[in-house]
Image 1 (cartoon, helix red, strand yellow):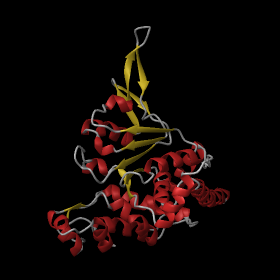
Image 2 (cartoon, helix red, strand yellow; image 1 turned 60 degrees about the horizontal axis):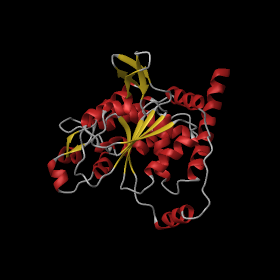
Image 3 (cartoon, one colour; image 1 turned 180 degrees about the vertical axis):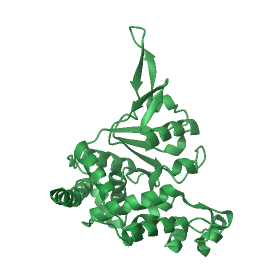
Image 4 (tube, one colour; image 1 turned 90 degrees about the vertical axis):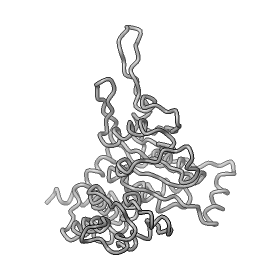
Length: 321
């Protein structure tokens, strides 16, 4: 019984810590509540996030602020067409004793900001992919574990597609969330300009330690999920696959490839975090629906007809829901 009481206390603490984190981030990031919420959900679910938005919407500042509020080490990697895999993971050098020594690259940090990930060639993208999936890197036959916790928050610019290397579907699938960062409202933009053009600068204090984040991640895995919620998540993903019995008309008409099993896993994990953040100890169907769009957005491949007619993934997901 005492073990159950401990877990209930930990679950209640999760909600408190989540609110404290949001308040701390809000000192610097004005508006973008949904974006912040989804980034934090990704972190507690041990998933990586892809932030998509035009330049100047504070994507880099957001990631930096979240890293500070979490008390984690942070590295930014600016992706360019001439970036090599060794520039990310590190390389072996000959030291003064004429022995090879591995010099760690910038990927050895708790939070990695992969800035404009679609500006670098596939070989370098693939080097980051191994780090994201295996949470370790291999150099000269040796494997080197990455710090724990470890997250990649990548940014992508949806315009200026010339000179970019679009991420392949297999790599997109490694990201738990595809988060759309939109323009601020008039009131939010006014508040941003007031806050950033004066002499006072807000400072962010660490709210959680690495050990507390790892404990919260472990708690998410323990959250019970009822069979009907689990079945709903799996059916939702099955409905994205055209040519299968469960696909509705909106999918059959507009989608060439649907989401894979990883989407079902992420829907359940995301629903668990969403429920905990709202002070509930088990997710329901509404929690699955709340995380469905950022999880499915980058996993549905629209066909030519959908692209020609301007049918957005958001409308397709709304039709599936």
